[in-house]
Image (cartoon, rainbow, N blue to C red; front, side, top):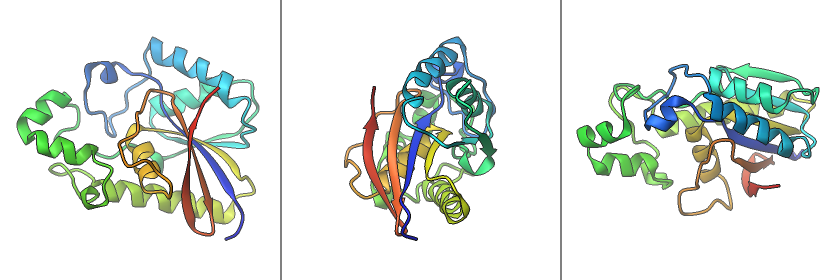
Length: 201
């Protein structure tokens, strides 16, 4: 595959569970008022990017973000279960501080780590980071194999953004920061993913 695909991948707007520092995973939590405002601010950036299609996680917080950010831009939005956050298993719904206390600081460090050797880490009964990455990459690469669009936005979750960025060529060695509605650019060509950096106004 020689065609170049450009992906603009962003985390959803803020939710109340984000404020509480609570594992959301597959739990369907809606945006709060601040999150809706963040999505409206995102519109000012995405309208200048020439996006042809938006792929969104099917969870409300991601789909709401896409719907607000691309309102009136006449860009099709489709929702996909494959773009969900990781399923967190036993810790899902718990406060991060409680999870650290229960499973240890080392487990939290491994979960946040961008290193290849930590990709297979998972909490009890949860999806591993590698499992999440494989799920998302498989979906996106299949999309590339059949799509007429090559300038694509992805409305998704922090874990998806982390996995995709840190598994790509040219990615930073230190963990990326993940503000709500922060946009990162990835390219895909010749079966190779590359990181092109943070997208700013």
